Image (cartoon, rainbow over the protein chains, first blue to last red):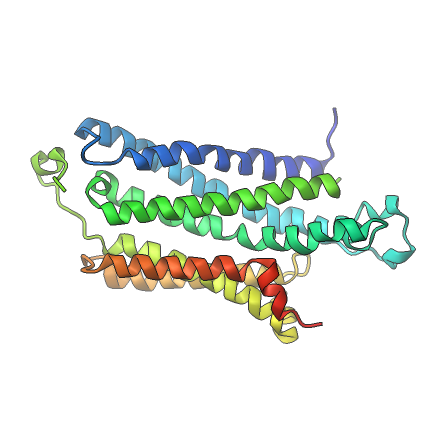
Length: 185
Length: 120
C-alpha cells in the first residue's frame, strides 16, 4: 500500500484539497441560500454568517493551495520532457513522462485528447477558482449579517461561488481522468 | 426589504457602504478576464508564448497565472480605494459587467476556443 512521493502530492492536490473544496460547496451554498430576511432571526443570521466566514475563508485558502501545488509542483512532473526522442522510447519508458505518453505514446490517437483538451482546459480554468473564492470570502467577512439585506450583492456571491465550483469540478474531473490515463508516479 | 432587527437595535451598528463589496466582485471578474486574455495571447503569439515562460518547469502557464493574479490584485486595490466609502447607486450594472467578464474568461480558457488562435 505504498505510494511514491509524487503520488502523495497528487493525492494531496486532488483528493484532499480539491475534494474538500468540492465537498464544502454544498454547505456554503446552503448557507448563502438561507440568508434571507424572511427566513432568519438575528441569532440565526449571526450563527450562519459565522459559519460562512470560516467556511469561505477556508475554501479560498484551499483553492490557492490546490492551484499552486497543482501548477508549480505536480505540473512540472507531468510536462517533463524526455532527454531522448519520444518516438524511440517504449511505452513503459514513456509512462514516466505523462504528457508525452498521452500525446506521443503508442495509443496517442486515443489518448492525446486527454492532454490537448483535458489538461489544457484544467490548467487554465482552475485558476479562476481561488480568485472567485477569495472575492466571496472577503465580501462575507466584511459585511457579515448585512448581507441579509444586500440582496443583489448576496445573489452575486452565490453566482461567483457557483462558477468557482463548476470550474473546480471541471478541473478536478479531468485531473482524475488524466491521472488514470497517465498517472504521475 | 425589512432590516434585520439586531442591526437597528444594536447600539452603534452602522451600515457599511456596499462599494468595497462590489469592488471585490468586479476585480475578480477583471482578474479572471485578464487570465483568459493571457491564455489567448500566448496561443496566438509565438513571442508571448515564449516570453510568458517565467519559470521553465511550468512553462508559460507561470506567466499567464502570475500576470492574471497581478492584474486582479491591482484592479482590486484601485477599485477598493475608490469605492470603499461609497454606496453604489447601480450595482446591477456592476453585476452585469462582472458576469460578462467571467463569461469571457470561461470562453477564453476553453481549449476549443483558444486553440483557434494557435500558431504552428
